[in-house]
Amino acid sequence: MSLLQVKDLVVEFPHRRGTLRALDRISFDIAPGEILGVVGESGAGKSLTGAAIIGLLEPPGRVAGGEIVLEGQRIDNLGFEAMRPIRGRKIGAIFQDPLTSLNPLYTVGRQLVETIRAHLPVTEAEARKRAIGLLQDTGIPAAEQRIDHFPHQFSGGMRQRVVIALALAAEPKLIVADEPTTALDVSIQAQIIQLLKQVCKERGAAVMLITHDMGVIAETCDRVAVMYAGRIAEIGPVHEVIHQPAHPYTSGLMGSIPDMTSDRERLNQIDGAMPRLNAIPAGCAYNPRCPRTFARCLVERPELMHAGATRAACWLHDAADPHAGQAEIAARHHDAMAAGERATPEAAETIVEVTR
Ligand SMILES: Nc1ncnc2c1ncn2[C@@H]1O[C@H](COP(=O)(O)OP(=O)(O)O)[C@@H](O)[C@H]1O
Ligand code: SF4
Ligand SMILES: [Mg+2]
Image (cartoon, rainbow, N blue to C red; front, side, top):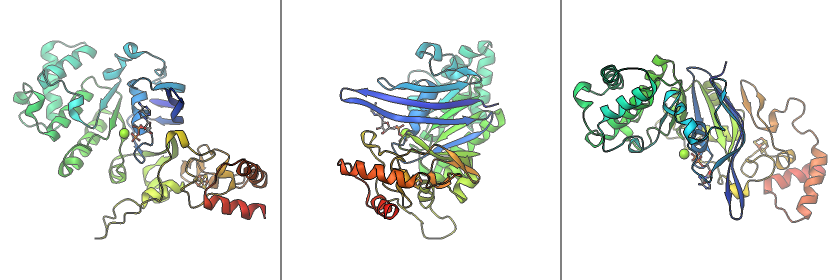
């Protein structure tokens, strides 16, 4: 059974001039003990997905549709207070900047002991012993002394280790880690990721690892979800998504992984930019940048469908017929164009071919 199920999740921001839909029907599962990577360009909706799961969406952002189910319990409709015991006990969080998770006025020991005792029935002395154990497990040297130090007495990397210890303190089933190493020195990023992977695997905790770094995903995750414009473009086992990407966006991203086997960095930028939330095109959100756009892509939104070893939201993988209804679509599109809506040059070319 899944540990976490996210079904058709919609997150919106109501504004004076209309509502912005930032997550548009996101669905995925995380199995117990699994590491799911979430990757995509800046603004794709990765952090909002994490925030919705831990119940920390900042107003006016709100879950406007769908469900989030943790161990069979629906949690998307719990208020901030009702989520409190779940946050910490069942879901631990790690953010980019360790200082956002730590109180500068308290020793790390006090914060660990309080978290442990808030969620687990243990004495102060037992909690302190556990806290020292956690600091040791996360690689803090001289943990018995360091436990009485304040956050500012730790380096950035050591502080993030403390945050990992804090996230694990109440033995949660799921850790949501949002760009946990982006703020750290490059030289220690890999160590922290390895540590996160190791301590979570040892405890059987599942991880949702949000990052824009495909290299981290490749080395760490079991499965990966590729996000684009508030939707999931592709999801599947990490090896398959990287080596046989089914979605043209994933193929583009894969071209952006530095090639470790050669001296040259194979940085393949995808032309264009992700659309703004108020200008997401009809049909497939990727259609203005996709080298393979065809008429259907402009009008009909593709849902995730089986695509070899992964699932991709792309009409190229429609088992029935990728070009289904193409002539009719092209005709509809012509009407839309006549009404003044614009199409991409590639798409327009396809339409011309289809209707010729
Ligand atoms: N408070 C807000 N009001 C309006 N839009 C927001 C707000 N917070 C985030 N967004 C938008 O939601 C989208 C997804 O943001 P986010 O999840 O932070 O992206 P990522 O983590 O993938 O870089 C972005 O387009 C961002 O501008
Ligand atoms: S649905 Fe069409 S536009 Fe979207 S990724 Fe697939 S081919 Fe490209
Ligand atoms: Mg983010």
